[in-house]
Length: 164
Image (cartoon, rainbow, N blue to C red; front, top):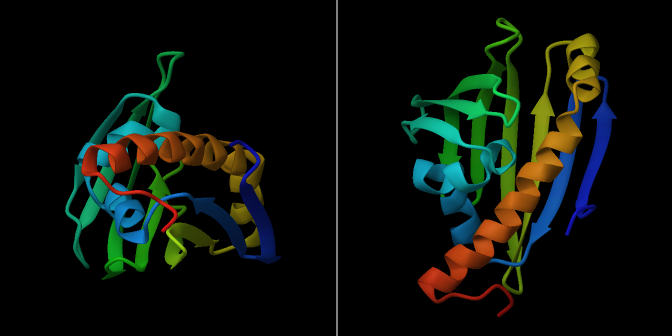
């Protein structure tokens, strides 16, 4: 399913990524909200330490353990949550402290399929371009591919299907 991610830069400060999943919106939202699910797909499916306090004002911290032995840590704060349609959160890579971006994830459902639209807003064009050059889209594509596979397992476990 690779290649199912659309990446655009609608302004000098933003990156928009859109991906459609063959799963109901409530299930896709749940996969973004709980460590038990995030561990299966975030960070490209690599082993992940996860702490999450999923509420406005709450926070999260993820540490991805890459196959080459490197650890990559990220953290942020949840600014707005509207279940099952919206998550607004900050995102900071601990390897580059002080560069905080804001991610807005909107989930819409049509016929049992969910479209996730992620808009990441940076403070400067240089930060946006640096993140893009670091492989942001490739990492997101790999994570979303892992999410797609995990959603099929999760849907089967819960007895739900994507297309209605």
